[in-house]
Structures are given as structure tokens and as C-alpha cells.
Image (cartoon, rainbow, N blue to C red; front, side):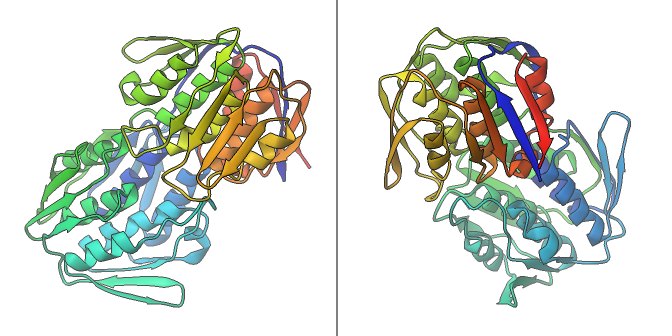
Length: 418
């Protein structure tokens, strides 16, 4: 099994491009199931989760072509299977996103209960209640969800909790429903807006994406379309933290600063110098980082997917700060690994007190989930000596060529076997 070896101490300097967002790519790929015409997506990142979603579409009967610019064309005119099997779904929770499109277009879907990162409960009941409100019959058994409907109808759906994938799943289903669907307490994430833009390019009528109320006017069928995936704001912010940690000077290109107001404000509070262009961000790390505190919230609040990376920065800051996690109840599994590097972190419930220290020292550590794996790589970049990170298959789910990009910035990093 692959590991990543990092020798810390090098400031990151240079420029790298940001990839397309994984969390926008996966729903856009699922949306191709809504039409018999070809859908072309560009800006697709080369990630394990994207490969899994393409395999899932392929086993449904989709024809997939990758062009010379790594764009993906999906032809779902030959769908012959509406079952999403356990062997694919168990590795990626976002597989649940095929359920809404399959029920909307074909009247049925059978989906294995999903897996993914072990960061806490992410129940799919909000998806199922929404589909039931739209007329679907839901049955559970044998580890599978079976949903059937002659044709979905419009409904007013109020989410008990803000759910990104739930919003996306029901938004896709509603595009082919009879009548108008209103989603209230909907997720406002940029990836939801990106999916709405993709659906509208296919002839859907989605309004209000980016606000807490989304209205979808159902149509009889969708057409083909072309859409470019938005830049990955979490990858962008991860590299911003890396530059700050190493007292570096890094310019990130092909990104969108407007998606990162909260992380930028928090990094500036920590003493980091940040300059922004239309699609670039330049980050210069300070000699000494200042302690900050943060609390995760749904967008536009501070993203839970950046909490672990910021904890590394806080571990090397002057003073003490608190991290409060409000999204997932089990997202501090990286704390014990950071403690192996010398971090002073105390967890009480959903909060972690971080006492800054002058240095971290390299050690063998183990990644527990996608963002934890990124935080350990960042810790290794800033630590003295060698850090060896195992179970790095997690990082390949969400970061495209992370070692190559860090090498280009001067990091001493390599992937090893064993």
C-alpha cells in the first residue's frame, strides 16, 4: 500500500494551477443520467472518486469518452440498468446522487446504502423523504434502497438540516418532475450553484441556487449540454494553508477568490498576507503565525473540509485557539495523529483546544479520511525531519496530483511503496 514521505522545512515558493472541484464534478456527472443526449463536462479533475463515479455510470450503461483535453462526454441514451451496486457505492458516499436522476428519468432506482469517509453520520433520510414527497415509493431491504415512481410530481420540501447532497439529489430529480418543486433550507454551497448552472445548460429551469430557497420548474425532458466545472475551493485553501505554514510565497492560478471569503479572512487574522486577482490568489506566510479560533458552518461559513488543515496551522501559531466542529460529530480523528507529531490539542466534545508550539517533529502517522490525509501532509511540510503518512488512498479521492504540485513548489515529498 502506498505511503507519502515528507521531509519538512522547505518554504513553498512558486505557482501552481487549481483543479476542478470534486464536489461539483460528481453531481454534474450524475446529472448526465437525466438526458438521452450527450453531456460534455470540462475542468474534470483526475481523482479516484471521479473514476468511481464514471465506473458507476458505465455499469448503468452510459458511454463515456475522454478527449485530448481531459474533458468527459457522457452519453446516457443506452442506460440498461438502474441498480447502483455495493462494490462501487461502498467506497464513495456521493454515489447516492444517481438516485434522483434515475427515478426521475426511468421511474426506478436501486441503490446500495452508501459508504465513504468515516467522519460521522451522514444519513440519507432527507433524500428519501424528499423523494417520497414527490411521489416516489421507498423500500429498504438487504442493504439497498429501492425507489419507484410512475412520474415524480412537484412538491414543497423543507429540509430539517442543511444537506448539500440532499439538495443536489432532489434538485436533479425535480427537473423532470411534473410541476414546480420548492426546496427550502437548501444548501447554498457554490457546488450547488454549479450544478444548477449545469442543469440549466441542459434545458432545466432552476432558480434561486445559492440561496436557501431553490425553485425548480419541471420539464418533460432535458437535452445535451456543455458545462465547465468550477475551481476547487478546498484544494485552493489547502495550498493556501501550506504556503502559510512554510513561510512560503505561492500563487494559485485558475481559481476563484470569491468562493473563499471565510478562509481568507481567517488566514489574514492569523497574519498571512493574501493578494487576489480575478482568478489568482497569492499567499505569503509570516515569520510567526497568530492563534485564531474558528467554528465550522455550512457555506458561506467556515468549511468543515478545511478544519483539519487549519488545525495544523493553529498547532504552530503563537497562542491558543479553539476549533468547534458543527457539521460532523466524528471529525477529530486526525487529532491523535497530529499529537504524534508533537501538537498540543485537547478535545472536549465537538471542540478542540489548540495550544501553539514552536515546532512539530516528523513521525509515522496514518490518514483516517480525505481531509485528515491532507492535514498530515501539511503537518509534514512544516515539521522537522521525516513524516511518513500511510493509508494515503484517501488523499487520491480529493486531491489531483498533490505530490507533483507540492514538488513544483519546492517541497521534499515522494510516494513510496510498503
